[in-house]
Image 1 (spheres, rainbow, N blue to C red):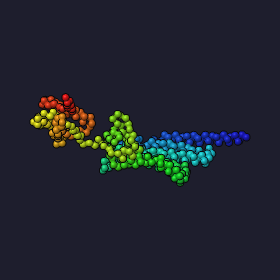
Image 2: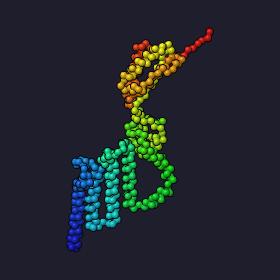
Image 3: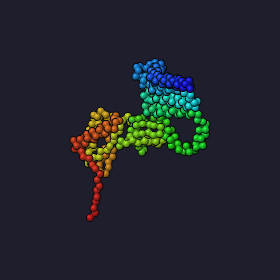
Image 4: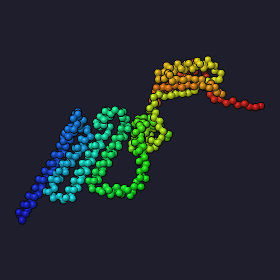
Length: 354
């Protein structure tokens, strides 16, 4: 009896030693994971400058997670025999380790496809074509989505889910899925059309038949704009891709046109004098394009003489445009006042028969 008791105690002591060793393995991998990750990234990034750049790498944190999980997995493998772990349990542990490894790698790879990634920055700088930031971001979103979809299929394969059966099941409900996903597919295709055509960029002020505002983001489904009321509007990509789009931010110059109505008794000499004064005033404005300025005696109306004025400004900012319009209008009022010219307004003559 004493021999049996001593044997059991010796077995328990051996198990405790094994558990301690396994815990030490976990702690060792946990402690060394930052250093191992650093050395691996340093090995493949010869031009990296400084530790900060390496630690900010997309692969640094996923690698740390991987080596930490690897330590736990090796510790469980070490304890398999001492603790008499069943094969089913080990299969589950192995699958969990594989799934976490796949997700960590997918996360690292997806994080490499962002505008902040050094890889993308180098590609953008070396590209001969001028890549727009918003369109590049859209392409990167597509790339990240593909990475996660591939990772999902790998996880399903690890879990030994019958993909052919899954595809067959999707085939049975294909009609329902297709009908439900029609709008989504249209919007994704619309986003691709916007990516190819590039009618606007993030930050541009655009106008469609129903919406107007500054573009804040372009996603798979929608284009988000902030309108003049500071409200955010999400427009389906299919809608905006099929609409006529005015991109006010692409203006090279702005037009300003108006009519000045003078009294019928105004002489041609006075009209010529007013025209010359207004033209000289416009020429003196540095933001007015001189060769595009036009002042013309347009027509004779029932209640006055119409003087047509058209000019272009090299200002595209709307606020600056309105400020210059305000200045020009005030200067014209001053010119008319100094020349003793009045403006007419619509009148109606009523004759009463006695």
